[in-house]
Length: 308
Ligand code: SF4
Ligand code: SF4
Ligand SMILES: [Zn+2]
Image 1: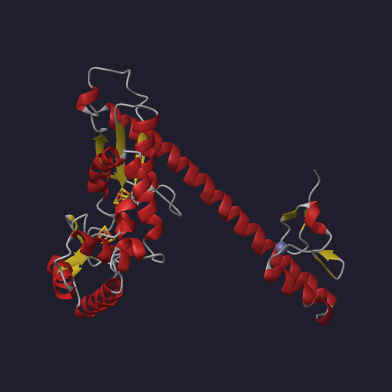
Image 2: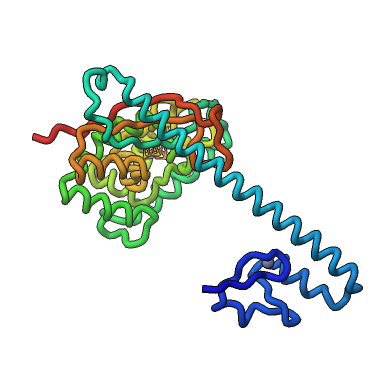
């Protein structure tokens, strides 16, 4: 199928879009800068316009060359990492006597910040205000089933479905190994709220009807660490989440990142015996990975729960 080019940046425009993307009879792509450039044509002397056009085109060519170069380097790094991962796997004592296990799936872990810092008064106050708010909202309901709008509702339903399918135990076993190795990359989005909502509190109160506002508030505050991981959730410590599963939000309890899902699918759908998880200083889909910033920092074989 023949393609035509933007008059300014020279990128290919599919013919289906060529009819309506024209300025002064010239074909132009959807970029605002290309369109603005063409709109200026009538007010600029012809020779100046052509000189500026040549500069624009050269800049775009250079940008495309850089992008392709980065993509190529990235692809090379991904291939190199795959070779390194396999060598690492084959060097494990568990693999010393066999070459038949080279089909073990390999997953790359997200990389969490592990640096702790004292929890500031501002963050503590913010969290306290959030807790007071959601506790007061929870108190307006007599049980969790009455809540029909809540940020945790979708996660709560998904969690119940998983429990009904009876694979949550196996998933938790996988999570306990993978997440311990990762150390909570996903917790960064917990900020000063930990995703705790009225539904979280109401579910907790349904299990402990003897608790009042002060008891539930003190319960959360007593778990709050004095130091937590930098730029992460207030409850995120070097050892993991400071809250019990019962006190965590359904968003937290239900969240499974792509790596956990890949392990889950390998064990539960493909029936593999183990998965090799590799943790690198930086993920290989980062902008410009290189050997130093994507070096291996940890690795581990992950096993499924032995289901009886
Ligand atoms: S769910 Fe994924 S991102 Fe979150 S702690 Fe576990 S491995 Fe890390
Ligand atoms: S409450 Fe716990 S599990 Fe949830 S984001 Fe914070 S540290 Fe992570
Ligand atoms: Zn363009």
